[in-house]
Image (spheres, one colour):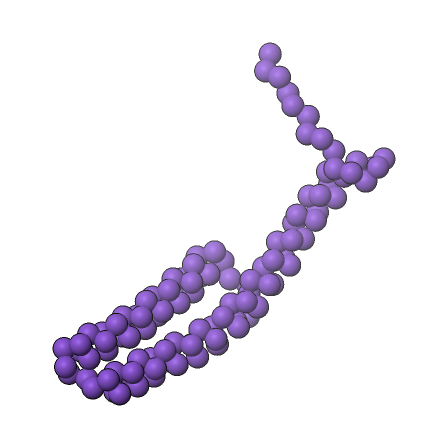
Length: 105
């Protein structure tokens, strides 16, 4: 998958949040219908299980892809940190240089 910008990643996470919230509501609404006598216990549990199974399948598929995207980003952005650490390393001992503080005159 191509590199995603922060806006695209935010949309992915927000969409997953909305999907999971919707599944939670479906489960709760099935319980409400059961409590009102519309669904028998057997069917209420069945429909809740169907919803939760689909939720798990969607999350599993989505998170597999999202995990891969995040791992790629961690590697890519880690290169930036490595380059900066190398830049700050003291050539004499290999340790990072201390930052110099300037005093305002």
